[in-house]
Length: 260
Image (cartoon, rainbow, N blue to C red; front, side):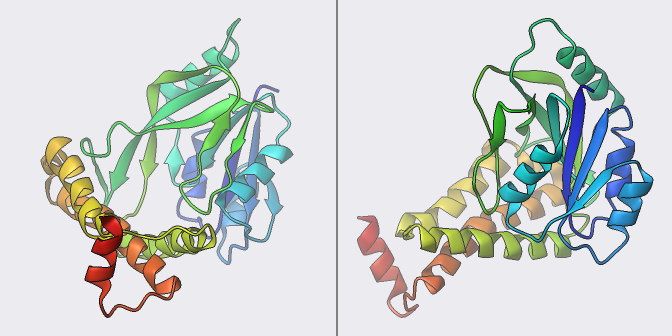
């Protein structure tokens, strides 16, 4: 056994079959489900995955649990809305069978939002997803979790496909959920927003991705995506203020006084 694919799920019946079909070549497929009410678990089992059920404990905790269940020496961590094309599969098989592979590999994601690939702005989007078991794990984080590797890291040439957010409604629902998680963590660790982080940084993020990284070339989908992406940071900071108990009255003066 060489490669174990690990995936966490909850109500992913629209994605899980496509994802698992793209890794038919893997020696093992692990799915950790956190309480799906749809056919996710049934479909995963039909596709040959070993399914485990675990009450939701956070993104990093769920993924690390999946890693611990894997039996192969190599871990390929995927989200249910991702797919591995044939050329990437062939490259993965080559590197894990090579004489001196690295300990971890970054894989670029081609991101599809609203049914269209966004080729600019957020691209390239390298994620460390392939690594030796025992050499890496997901750092503790409520959201935007990432793998920490002890050892050499390289990049693969081929890309995975990421079919995220089929429409704006799903994108906004995701934004609301993720900003709740991030705001909760920020309050626990004592983080406090500033005038810059609330009012200026979101604008800089929009300008960087939409103008300087040419997100404007992705058409109306690129415009909508980058506006919502900038809003993410603004909404997150406002939620932190609310959770911290700061009154909205006098918000501007209080924040900009802190920023100076």
